Image (cartoon, rainbow over all chains, first blue to last red):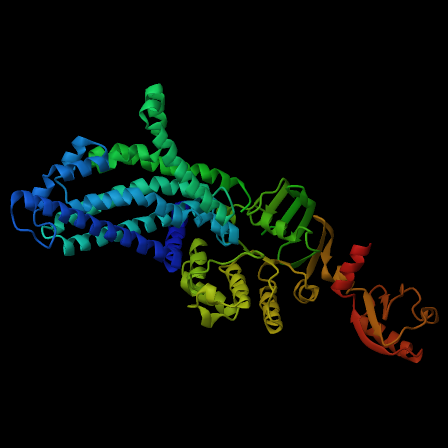
Length: 301
Length: 302
């Protein structure tokens, strides 16, 4: 019980300390700006499609995108765009029934979430070891509770950033789109904020695991980014057709250890379909974090 | 309560090829204020790190408060430390930071405790100030404040007066003296006059070992040695009849001699000083024992 209490106390303090730092404010602003920017780009794309559609249907053009949303959602162009994003034709068809703003947000969050995590959290632990501030805490709690608290704190910060991004996307959609369903959009943005969090959490575990390996802030930042690049790079290579064909079972088994292998599951609208991938991602994040912690637990702080 | 607040036996620690501790053995009785004295690289900071669990020893045994090596489960709140050159989290206020530490220690009213310890280090009016906005001296006092949270039985202070203004050094000495008798303090400092003013026990460290330890009275000879500073050198041979059996010695302008068994120092002063003056000596200062600095230098030379 004491370990849980301590982890929670550390998490609360870490979150507060992060929010009071300029770095976190900048990255939170980037989360929001990224979501808003992507939504604006999407609405411009939507308007272009609508204009083409209006020409084909011989109906009047409108200045505000979304007037012909239903027609656009049924258009083969959008279906093609979506299929490219999720790499699955059937799933793309299912997703076309969802608010487009939520889909764009999810794509942006899945694409850039890991990079943001690497930038915000890769020096969270190494920084405290480097400055020695960890020693003030470790005289009062054990290393595992402290490290778990840091992970929870950064996790909450991540969720906060993703939620702000979702809010930004919702407001932008509300302002920009004519046929915007506020309730459905809010529901699906919340749904996808959670799945984006789960995806980013696996990478959070990776960079915070790496952060426990070194006491150098520049090294932990570099290693965090490098491990992320390697993670996506190796997964991309394993996903190539000729590699998969060489040893299908083995390659597919290895792929399951990489977060990117479970990304597609997170697009599925039903929670039951999301669950296997989500559990795998949470397990990957916790495992990578724990592997890094094995080093911190044994070395001089 | 254990007789010893701390027992270290044969501690060894290497950083690569550098030997930081080479079989350090040291006992610290409960309730004392002990000064750790030694040159840079003697192993003081590493010793503190090992006692507080931040540094893993390569060999040796540590017994903190009679309950084995440091374990947060057993020792959290009972042992606190002011580490050397460790920064405090910069973005929080002094109050937020101390409240966080107090919460971790399980203090029931953490905010009030933060205010209390800030008052002790004369920073009560800075509770809302961000750590990064504090001066170096204030940060050092804040770091001392965190070591006073709760009711610790053992406090380790590594260079508590380092970088403080002279008037703050005096205040810090006072803060440390106020803790005397309440708990066991181990203070590491290069400023031997600070240690002499605050400690009742001392240990000399050299190349990762403890070369001498004991009460300040014993180490400096306060209980049996008289030191007299003269304005000019005197002929010791001429004084021999007067100082017979008192093991007199002359080091520069300092004349030292031993008190006799059970002899009251004031009786000795009444006898010796007028006799010295009558021999033409001009007395500038009389003190019991040597300075800690002298005792330390003598110890190093021997």
